[in-house]
Amino acid sequence: MNWLRQVRIYTVFGSIVLFWSLPGFGGSLDSEKYSRVIWNYLETLCAFGPRNPGSEGYRETLDLIRKVGEKYADQVVEQPFLVRSSMSSSHEMVNLELQFHGTEGGAPILIGAHFDTRPFADEDPDPEKWSKPILGANDGGSGTAVLLGLAQYLSQHPVARPVHLVFFDGEDFGAKDSGMNLLGSTHYAQQLAQEDKAKWPYWVLVIDMIADKDLQIFKESYSQKGSANFLDKIYAVAKDQGNQALKEELKYTIYDDHYPFHRMGIPSTVLIDFDYPYWHTLQDTLDKCSIESMFSIFSVVAQTIRDL
Ligand SMILES: [Zn+2]
Image (tube, rainbow, N blue to C red):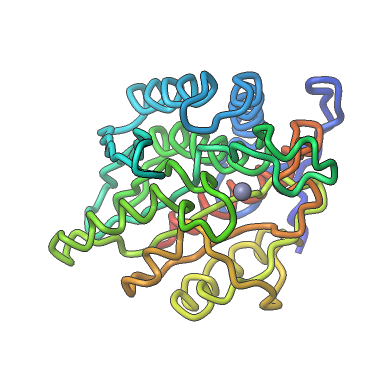
């Protein structure tokens, strides 16, 4: 199959970027436009600096998501919550949800990404850097940028089911084994558990760290266990689009924002490239990110939700 219908080379931001148009969209996915849109969002997020809760970059990120929501979403829902990290300190956090009602209704597809970045670079090779906040271009930035791009896309190309784009707070907040991670998704799932099951998502899809130049996404254990049919669907779309990044092998068991939903019995999937050498280091910067990788996931997700 000749999936590479059209290849053009542009110089964008000083680097060579390939844009291509993919089959299966009937021309509805403008790859050049959305590659630019997504990359612009990632650049903007990185220009805010570290975006850990309490930082200036965090506030600017919330403003950006709200603005995009007001412009493109059918409805924006804010879910504030308080996190107590000790007897004396608490942190105000918020999940932001951009809702698209869809053309036919039904249970929504929840697509999530964490917008916070890690407050400390605890995997940095240099111990002196361990207390510094990371920029999180890939970890936090890439998923957020793709979701913002999806907001723009869905406003122009609605799909049948409602789609809720959820920007989770506090995914990367605490030290390892502190129990202070996945805070936003855990809170969201707890709220959901009190709702009628008719309101629960049809499927939860989380994307995280999808910008690596050498993108390799292996199947993740909880995703395979709880959402095998949806994984099959994603992989079929990826294959159809000639996407080489999605690997058939099962490799990791990962506690990401899909996990609190998986635990409730909701089919939940994470797409993550966990083989990223700059994970939780100060080197997780924009120059490590690839728009081809991000766009390839964007287009797989856009097509997958169109078919559900
Ligand atoms: Zn992280």
